[in-house]
Image 1 (spheres, one colour):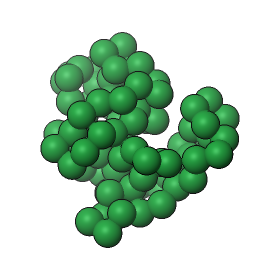
Image 2 (cartoon, rainbow, N blue to C red):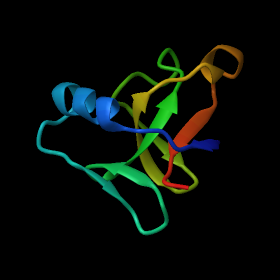
Image 3 (cartoon, rainbow, N blue to C red):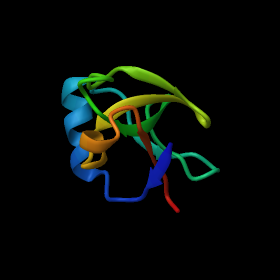
Image 4 (cartoon, helix red, strand yellow):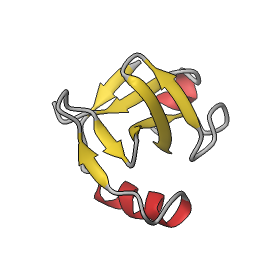
Length: 83
């Protein structure tokens, strides 16, 4: 696992269209960026498809993003945080 802190505005918009229009973005007290009841994570979408849930050390995450790391480390999970 790694952590990243980027603007989630576009990611949230897409997630509301593709996953659940009634879920909202919020920030947990420990700095986890949340979409509905799940921690927002980036992952290799060939390993963890968009919208799938994955267990992280911080709780249950939902795949809403990917990153350049996916090519070299396909099993990596990148957790969205505020810090």
